[in-house]
Length: 92
Image (cartoon, rainbow, N blue to C red):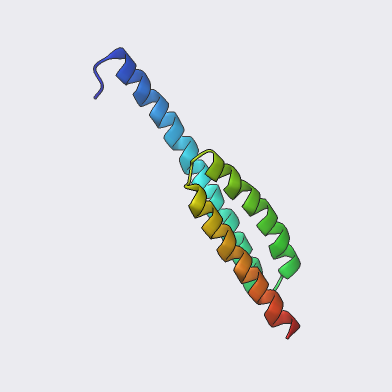
């Protein structure tokens, strides 16, 4: 447990930040899952609209360092590749 006044404040701050970061990460997982579900269901238009909102949130989380920016880019790339593959399969 913290003893000094500044250490106590840092503990309070870290608890608040941890709760906020966990909330953002959970929301990101949900958004990515929704994109994947739409792709698997064959709803390409809906998947693309979900992807746009997910990509925006991923970029924001990367900019605020909630997740690493490269991790955000990797997730966006993989989701985009899934959508493109589904589009290609639907047209063939």
